[in-house]
Amino acid sequence: MKKWMIPMLSAALLSGCLFNNARTDADNSSATASTDSSAPAKKTKLEREREKYQSDDPRECVQNFTFDGSFARGRTFKSNAFVKNVTQAVAIKRAVRYLTNGGWQINNVNESLGIISASQTVSYGNGKTVPFNVGIEQAKGGVNVDLSYKISGGLSSPVDAVRNEFCAVVESVGAK
Image (tube, rainbow, N blue to C red; front, top):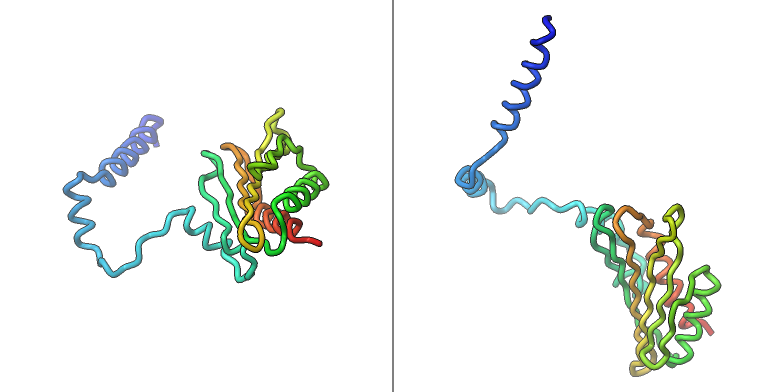
């Protein structure tokens, strides 16, 4: 086959693929109208990933665990739980102790607002840190614990590890 034919065939195939797959708005609306409306909607990658991490674990910190974002844009993890029979002051002290012993750098503790700001240095992150915030609010019969952890784009944390760390903080608050 002559040298000039390979690039020409490649160009023809690519242009054919590009033009044949392109649709106008009218084409898209007719294609949408012709599809079966009873068919389930296609799930996004994030929805499929969330389903993958659903758990039968009855702990409130697991059941309330959510995350959004992506590897490229960054990801935010959140959870919350109620802990019985503990005051806000005691809960903050226990959470700070747990986080410190677990290798988190405590950046700030505001006892009156019930906020703990912690962070860890990222491996191979050239000084980047990831924030971990814990909010503890007095409630009737105990405290509400809110947790959030945010990683920037290009960083990754295993979802199970984050969820387990959240629950460990909640459990440390309730520990006697």
